[in-house]
Image (cartoon, rainbow, N blue to C red; front, top):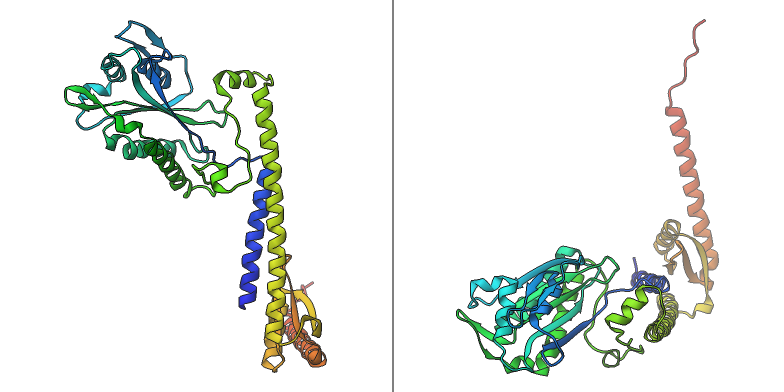
Amino acid sequence: MTNANIRAIIYYTIERMCILRLIQIERRLITAIYHFNVKMVTRTSGGSCVASAAYIAGEKIKNERDGKMHDYRNKHEVVHKEILLQKSAPSEYSSRAKLWNAAECAEKRKNSQTARSINAALPRELSREDQIDLVRQFCKQCFVSKGMCCDFAIHDKGDGNPHVHILLTTRRVDKNGFTQKERTWNDRKLLLEWRERWADWCNHKLYFVSDARVDHRSYKDQGIDRLPQIHMGVEVCAVERKGFKTDKGNKNRRIRQRNLEVEIAELENEIKALKRERRQSLVDNIEQQLGCPLADTQHISGNYADMERYSNHLQANHVPCEFNIYENGKSELFFRKSDTDKALMLVNQLRQNNLKRDNQANTQQKSAQPKKSKPRL
């Protein structure tokens, strides 16, 4: 197979991939989504790490500091929950209630930040086992290794939006409990690093199961002509799920439609460019192999097997030729116009030889069959 044919196959494969992606977009088959939001749990906003822990785990936990009971046992979307502790942390912190009550009581100020909360989208292309391992490995690398205690829970309502809630302590810990506040964990550079590491871990897991990938950068930083969607919030999402349209929901739908149209147009242009490049590559190869412009060539068409036999036969008889493969299964055999008579004579000669050989084979096959004996009366 010539280099030109290999290139043609490569172009064809890339083109098919683009068309498949275009079909996926038109069917609105969304690939992996990147979402990674970090916020602090603060008393000034009425939050507490005990309440947050009860919520993400779907448990009933009492806040020993103010006596409030937080009961979220009716949250049935919690499919996995896990606590990852520092080696130096007391073993009793493996209890969610004791861990977060200790963290809550360690804060004395009325405006204290009691925990760091992360909400991140999980690639729905991954199995549940891979999702759990993804979160576990990410938390160990980025948080536990730095000295934090980590509590995470995976939520999945079966609506195509699996996500993880991660709750992190803000103080260092030793065998006696929580110690000093660690201000370096508030560094913005660290947040950017976490966002990048999350994308890396997601893509590492996706590599083995899907072509989908995520990117932690904004569309602008990626150089992509897309509009970002606006954050709707829990209340607006709840209204939308009930079938009611909201202003934020309508705006996001318009943004999605616009982004969809842009992506389809880009892929269509890419397919057209690939087709032009492939055609030009084939023409260049023919002209190079035959040493003349395409206008000074002649060609015959047929299936791949026949064209390959004709090509070998012509070359064996010193007639320069070149054949190309197309995606419809057909091929074309090119030769110089000046060699047309000789080329067609050789092709017809080969066809006749093949026909004679086939006839002889059929005759031999019939003669080899045993004759049926006449039945005796």
